[in-house]
Length: 127
Image 1 (spheres, rainbow, N blue to C red):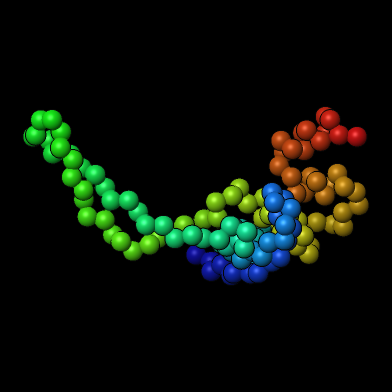
Image 2 (image 1 turned 120 degrees about the horizontal axis):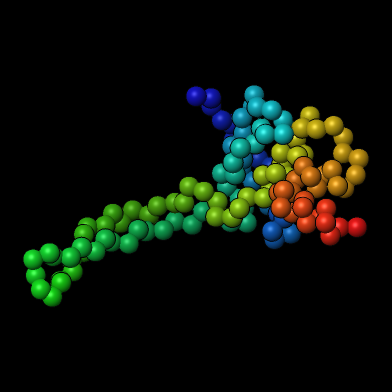
Protein backbone atom coordinates (compact mmCIF):
# COMPACT_ATOMS: atom_id res chain seq x y z
CA UNK A 1 0.00 0.00 0.00
CA UNK A 2 1.35 3.38 -0.98
CA UNK A 3 1.97 5.98 1.64
CA UNK A 4 0.00 9.20 1.09
CA UNK A 5 1.53 12.58 1.85
CA UNK A 6 -0.31 15.47 3.51
CA UNK A 7 0.00 18.73 1.57
CA UNK A 8 -1.21 22.25 2.39
CA UNK A 9 -3.20 24.34 -0.13
CA UNK A 10 -5.01 27.67 0.00
CA UNK A 11 -8.04 27.96 -2.31
CA UNK A 12 -11.26 29.94 -2.58
CA UNK A 13 -14.10 27.69 -1.46
CA UNK A 14 -16.69 27.18 -4.24
CA UNK A 15 -19.45 26.88 -1.61
CA UNK A 16 -18.74 29.83 0.71
CA UNK A 17 -16.71 32.07 -1.63
CA UNK A 18 -14.13 32.54 1.15
CA UNK A 19 -10.46 31.62 1.34
CA UNK A 20 -9.87 28.19 2.88
CA UNK A 21 -6.70 26.45 4.05
CA UNK A 22 -6.82 22.75 3.17
CA UNK A 23 -4.79 19.76 4.21
CA UNK A 24 -5.07 17.24 1.39
CA UNK A 25 -4.08 13.56 1.20
CA UNK A 26 -1.85 13.40 -1.87
CA UNK A 27 -0.40 10.53 -3.88
CA UNK A 28 3.03 11.89 -4.92
CA UNK A 29 3.38 9.35 -7.74
CA UNK A 30 -0.18 9.74 -9.08
CA UNK A 31 -1.33 11.20 -12.35
CA UNK A 32 -1.33 15.04 -12.03
CA UNK A 33 -5.07 15.51 -12.50
CA UNK A 34 -5.82 12.83 -9.88
CA UNK A 35 -2.91 13.39 -7.50
CA UNK A 36 -4.94 14.89 -4.65
CA UNK A 37 -7.26 12.23 -3.28
CA UNK A 38 -9.12 13.53 -0.25
CA UNK A 39 -9.49 16.59 1.98
CA UNK A 40 -8.25 15.78 5.48
CA UNK A 41 -8.98 19.17 7.10
CA UNK A 42 -10.52 22.46 6.04
CA UNK A 43 -10.23 25.75 7.91
CA UNK A 44 -13.85 26.66 7.09
CA UNK A 45 -15.21 23.42 8.57
CA UNK A 46 -13.13 22.55 11.63
CA UNK A 47 -13.36 19.11 13.14
CA UNK A 48 -15.47 19.45 16.26
CA UNK A 49 -15.29 16.70 18.86
CA UNK A 50 -18.45 14.92 19.89
CA UNK A 51 -19.30 12.49 22.67
CA UNK A 52 -21.28 9.44 21.59
CA UNK A 53 -24.64 9.04 23.27
CA UNK A 54 -25.09 6.12 25.65
CA UNK A 55 -26.88 3.14 24.13
CA UNK A 56 -30.32 2.26 25.43
CA UNK A 57 -31.40 -1.33 25.93
CA UNK A 58 -34.68 -2.93 26.99
CA UNK A 59 -35.34 -5.80 29.37
CA UNK A 60 -37.05 -8.51 27.35
CA UNK A 61 -38.81 -10.30 30.19
CA UNK A 62 -40.52 -7.33 31.86
CA UNK A 63 -43.90 -6.01 30.82
CA UNK A 64 -44.25 -3.08 30.11
CA UNK A 65 -40.77 -2.74 28.53
CA UNK A 66 -38.33 -1.07 30.92
CA UNK A 67 -35.23 0.57 29.49
CA UNK A 68 -31.73 0.74 30.85
CA UNK A 69 -28.57 2.57 29.76
CA UNK A 70 -25.48 0.72 28.59
CA UNK A 71 -22.15 2.13 29.66
CA UNK A 72 -20.88 4.84 27.31
CA UNK A 73 -17.28 5.79 26.63
CA UNK A 74 -16.93 9.44 27.78
CA UNK A 75 -13.89 10.15 25.59
CA UNK A 76 -14.66 12.62 22.78
CA UNK A 77 -14.48 11.44 19.18
CA UNK A 78 -13.49 13.42 16.09
CA UNK A 79 -15.11 13.14 12.69
CA UNK A 80 -12.81 11.45 10.16
CA UNK A 81 -14.16 13.31 7.12
CA UNK A 82 -14.88 16.90 6.25
CA UNK A 83 -18.70 17.30 6.31
CA UNK A 84 -19.05 19.00 2.90
CA UNK A 85 -19.02 17.53 -0.62
CA UNK A 86 -15.40 18.72 -1.13
CA UNK A 87 -15.76 20.53 -4.49
CA UNK A 88 -12.45 22.28 -3.74
CA UNK A 89 -10.67 18.98 -4.43
CA UNK A 90 -11.50 19.26 -8.14
CA UNK A 91 -10.12 22.80 -8.17
CA UNK A 92 -6.86 21.73 -6.51
CA UNK A 93 -6.45 18.83 -8.98
CA UNK A 94 -7.17 21.06 -11.98
CA UNK A 95 -4.61 23.63 -10.80
CA UNK A 96 -1.87 20.98 -10.51
CA UNK A 97 0.99 21.63 -12.97
CA UNK A 98 0.93 19.08 -15.75
CA UNK A 99 -2.70 18.15 -15.16
CA UNK A 100 -3.66 19.28 -18.63
CA UNK A 101 -2.42 21.45 -21.41
CA UNK A 102 -2.87 25.19 -20.86
CA UNK A 103 -6.52 26.12 -20.67
CA UNK A 104 -7.51 28.48 -23.43
CA UNK A 105 -11.11 29.23 -22.62
CA UNK A 106 -13.56 29.19 -19.76
CA UNK A 107 -15.51 26.17 -21.06
CA UNK A 108 -12.43 23.98 -20.87
CA UNK A 109 -11.67 25.15 -17.34
CA UNK A 110 -15.29 24.48 -16.37
CA UNK A 111 -15.07 20.99 -17.91
CA UNK A 112 -12.02 20.22 -15.79
CA UNK A 113 -13.48 21.50 -12.52
CA UNK A 114 -17.27 20.98 -12.63
CA UNK A 115 -19.33 17.83 -12.39
CA UNK A 116 -20.92 16.35 -15.56
CA UNK A 117 -24.41 17.47 -14.50
CA UNK A 118 -23.26 21.10 -14.13
CA UNK A 119 -21.51 20.90 -17.50
CA UNK A 120 -24.73 19.64 -19.07
CA UNK A 121 -26.55 22.68 -17.69
CA UNK A 122 -23.87 25.01 -19.05
CA UNK A 123 -23.98 23.29 -22.43
CA UNK A 124 -27.77 23.57 -22.81
CA UNK A 125 -28.40 26.94 -21.15
CA UNK A 126 -25.07 28.74 -21.35
CA UNK A 127 -24.18 31.52 -23.81
